[in-house]
Image 1: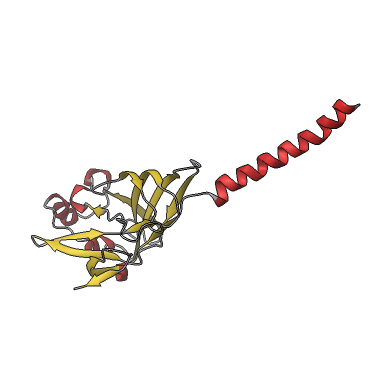
Image 2: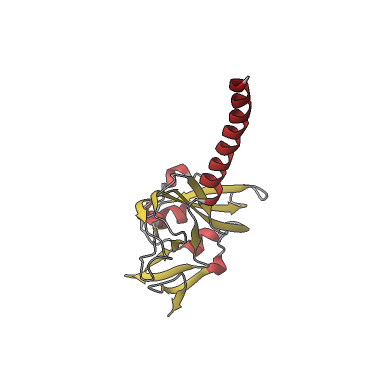
Length: 195
């Protein structure tokens, strides 16, 4: 009789404990990323350089980070449909990001869009003059975003919490052309210092 009582108590208690542990690992101890409000634009040898910035706003490291930049353009082929172009980055894999809360002078990540590396053969609907600018590395993000009636750039950051191993993908706000600002990011924080 005692054995059955122990089993009847331990099974629900074990299931409840597992659910609590699962919730803590996936919803309480998890990575958290904050994105900059704008995209920085500067020039290098008259070529526009576009950067975005993000930081780890948890108390723990985030490890094994991967980045994706997705540009959506409405009306490129048909008026009501969206075409997607995945934009190359100078560095789409980052081994680790330290917490910005533990150290004030921690380095924030500032990846750069590489518009000259777009695989134009994969996007048949890009006009020939745009393909030529991609090959000459003279294409601006504004020109690309102005191809359709509407466009937005979304950044995705996926990483694992350094302690729990919980994985999460973060999505930035949809950046519009109005979010491209001339200037560089401040050394600390996510703001652009305007030129």
